[in-house]
Image 1 (spheres, rainbow, N blue to C red):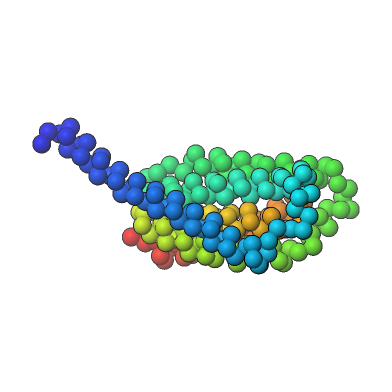
Image 2: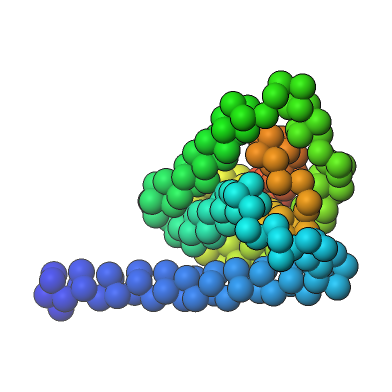
Length: 212
């Protein structure tokens, strides 16, 4: 066999497992969304004023932030299962989510009187937020970690954290449809904490479950 033929054969062999993982990971992400929906709609459902809320800038900003985060985390999950894959393209999407939230917080601080800042940050159900997002993320986290076991992540802790980010990002999108606290201050504080808990749990689990 000529050298060029050998190189082409090795490249083809490398692409096959990668394509198989990509298909499996996409199915796993679809499963994460489906499982979360199965839990969310019967137990929580849409907020009572959903039809009116979708016309308000603060609700749309909240939904944009968590949706961008979920999309970025899903893209990172696909890359995390491939050795040597570049994460940077999806990190830019995550940065866009953060920038959108920062703009929302800055706008609220400039518009709302200082006397309202603490009330907006606390909201009416911060403890519910801290509980529900991790609870909704449990099954998706297990699915995402299972998908990564079919890949070859070079950093188990980082891959596990990305699985946690994907799971909690999906959970946050659904929870945002029920949550009646639309303040960017509330989202920046309590959504971030809830998502952070799941990311830490994913990192811990990944360091043990995703070792080669």
